[in-house]
Length: 469
Image (cartoon, helix red, strand yellow):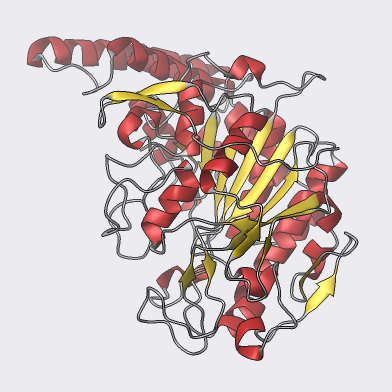
């Protein structure tokens, strides 16, 4: 897996980039991305924000103030910039951006286990294995980011899909959580990862740039020498390089990696020091805030798909890490989670809107599932306490903005307890088809599945029938 690290690991990212030749995900097939420009010629982009752990729909954006206390919880709804749309009182900044947002309140599937449920959201397909592990396997369906990696590079030569600031993962796991890889389509389609030094959240853009023309020449010479050495080694050992990857694809990826580093455009895109201090403060000095700011810059650089995985300091919490609120739900949301999310998400949407980027950029935010209607209700995790909510895939909410979608609308609804979809159900497959559709990639385009020995479509879903401007 290719990663570009932060200042705490200075010097590693550039060597890794050259050595692996972008093996972690850069693919340059031209099958689909030629259609990814708008009528004005600007590259289309998708930013998929994954809220790892599963945020509570009832306490954030599908509130039921008339329900009993054990269902409605402690928070109150507030009015927003969208007439008739209310969200949680602890999201005041986001409330001011709701005229740009569509709330899809009818997301649903059947998987209550984190890893398999993450796989369903990342890939848009039902989990293919028994739900006995959270970790990625070869049999997984490919992620949306991997499908985009397979479709090719963006118009500017940057990767077709970039993931930041990390792969979603629980403490103690040795592998990424399910659904984030090329899976059965192949590891060569893993998306490009910009990995964070999570304790500081500082992008080391110097690791992605060369200082002068002399450095570029040295890079070319060393690349040629590396190629000669590997050719000699392969001739002596009889082992192809790298195993499982055709030589021509390796050569393409290696040259693309050299070009990417020599050009410096990726490093420039994530160089947050180029932003004014007031912009940095607007997003918030958090890993999530900086990741969304980097995502905006990657949109401007022409990257088709950027996946931003949620990260906060609760990684080490064994009961309720991230949005997985099994205890102390309201205190955790009010004091820790919502201030980070509210500031960064509102700044991101406002920034895209003010820069005229929402017309060609579709933003989607969702977790792997929602939370139980009743506080303290047990469904899957025995650590759930009376102060928390357990896993609930039967009804949850996704936020969509941009891409021509009319803001301020609500699509779908749930029952009086927020636990069952009442109308217009939307599956993870439908969400994936909608994101692919915005990028001009056909859901019907097929790829070879060696596990089942047959062709598979990019998506079995249908685009969500939303109202567009």
